[in-house]
Length: 186
Image 1 (cartoon, rainbow, N blue to C red):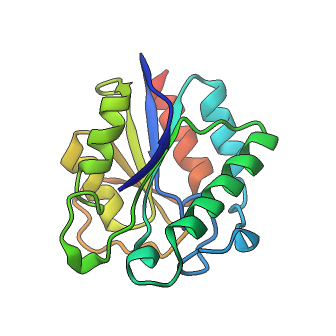
Image 2 (cartoon, rainbow, N blue to C red):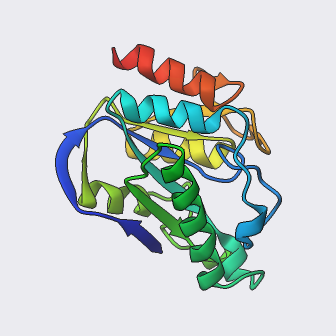
């Protein structure tokens, strides 16, 4: 499991975001920084969350590494370009955690496994009851449920609803998710 983050102990409400299909366009196994595209409204939604005091952490399965589609260095280049572009647009990410394993490896870091959130909780004091997981597939929802965080399913990516438990919030996009989070956090 890879990570890019700074140590921070101050408890703050946190939004853990899936990457591809949630705030980035998902071209399938994104290993080229030139193909990085933000979904409509996503950057503005992220900026609003930051302005309201939420910490933003990315948690993403990157099995393209384990499958041999791109290298860990290429994945890092995508993440660095994403950080650079977001920074230019006024959005600071507090951390990025990714699973590089092939799905058949059975690791604990691959969503819906909890290791990425456990690592984020060690690096950051996640505020209980005020932290969220937002993603576009059932694995993201189950990550939230498995770790005691509040899940929201956005319908911007593959939107594989799979086994989504009754009562899980589903919204059209990250803009709607951010609004809901800010309303609940008020």
